[in-house]
Image (cartoon, rainbow over all chains, first blue to last red; front, side, top):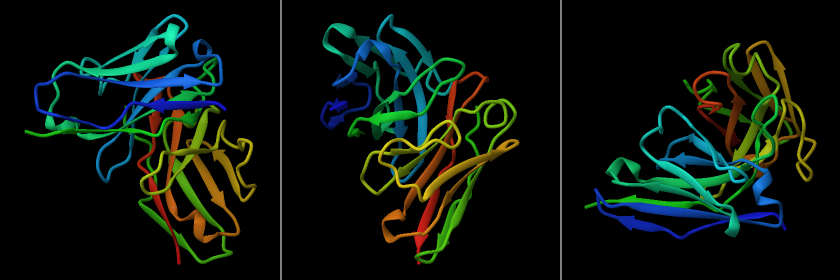
Amino acid sequence: EVQLVQSGAEVKKPGESLKISCKGSGYSFTSYWIGWVRQMPGKGLEWMGIIYPGDSDTRYSPSFQGQVTISADKSISTAYLQWSSLKASDTAMYYCARHAGYSYGLDGMDVWGQGTTVTVSS
Amino acid sequence: QSALTQPASVSGSPGQSITISCTGTSSDVGGYNYVSWYQQHPGKAPKLMIYEVSNRPSGVSNRFSGSKSGNTASLTISGLQAEDEADYYCSSYTSSSSPYVFGTGTKVTVL
């Protein structure tokens, strides 16, 4: 079964660092782009960026460039999203998802993780 | 990169058909056939319903169909059922500064 399994919920204080994970299985992890999506409480989906685990090529939405870091360890089929200094406004659900393809354009996200809730509060 | 524009809400009675619009620009929806639609039930992860404008992934009901005209894409749900009540998001590849963008989201209510 093709699946993405994310790490568990996190509760952090402002200024702390955090790294959440997304482990793929059931397919060739290095052959598909993995994206991260933010959903703030009661709000819509926001595309944050993507990584190609095969060579770690990474692209960011301008809204998130410099705010987060996307990385991957292909040896363990895992992608990461990390913050160096969290803010209260980072409180949200974060999803990883697999993009079905990227040739002439970036295709839809066909496999989703279950989501990781991040709560940042003093 | 601004979000694609969707109506905030759409409603219909069981058995009816409804259509959700998704308006972008020639740099995204109008320029490429990489429009997707997602369904999200409360507390759940989104689910891909349509990709490349009008293609359905395996397992998605044929009551869901997609189309595009100019800078506007549409998702039609025919034979509306109670289980279709959810939030729906469109998305598109874009040639602007960010390669991907979501729509603002539409809440579908089954009356």
